[in-house]
Length: 390
Ligand code: DHB
Image (cartoon, rainbow, N blue to C red):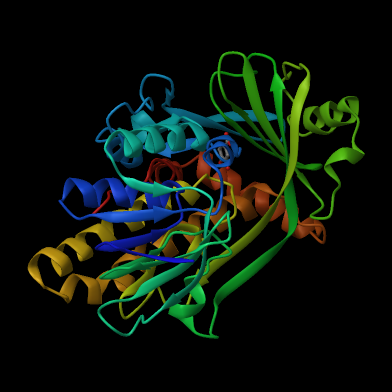
């Protein structure tokens, strides 16, 4: 059985990019349908990063019921730790901005609740299989429900906000793909039931590799340490995990507790060669991936949304195609800045498996250039808290 639905914008993916776009289009009076292959439960419980740029929080302020400022916590700096010493990067003093620690799955709970309350057409467990007629002004998404029924969503524009395995991306890029870089390490992530080890996040470079000491709440910490990309999350005992973490933050004593979640996050940098073809565009992880150091992923998705929203308002409300023609170029400027920042934080803080003594000494020189210079620290503070949004 095939059901055909009609809307103005068909959005594939109910992650931060898809839901935020639907919210903003709805406020502009533009109807959309959002589909996602996952269940609501899966969307709201997948553990991802936890840092929101100031501009992202300001966008979320427009979501009724957003808890980013009430449940999340404002952080005005981070610690960069190397050679056994910590150095605070004071965002507030350097750039007058801050970030919020508020996990992505909580953002998603807020976005899903707001969408459903507002009557948004949001369908879970509907899997996009193809995007068709992208060169016409009536493109469509062909999808399938969990029961096996076909759904065709005919729209004036299709947006792929469907993550790194995007179904929309091949339609946009053809066989070209994108710019790609892999890294010879990954992060071992844990959640542990113990109060924060420090008031702010610690990014630590050590001869044994990188560690990030983050938090989730007054009772739970999130921590990561650099590991082999093929590491088996189950291969370490809790004692071994604490040992690995502790030796990477010399000079700090970590608060230890039961470890109730563990995962290995692979690193890659990717930017699609094209972000739009005809009436189909890709945003968020469908368009780009950054390594996690610096937590740019979701923030970049939010920035894409703003640029595309403006283009769609012009197209669908004023019949003006110019902002859409400029969409990719405008979005790519920020995407490449965020790619650079994520790559830079990663390369400055991690120890590559083949690093020579020269590389190691140079890296410490780089870290000192950041913490001992107001200009160096200001670049980090500006990029971490987020460049102004359009
Ligand atoms: C977290 C993740 C990051 O990649 C980062 O740079 C900071 C915090 C986190 O999950 O808490």
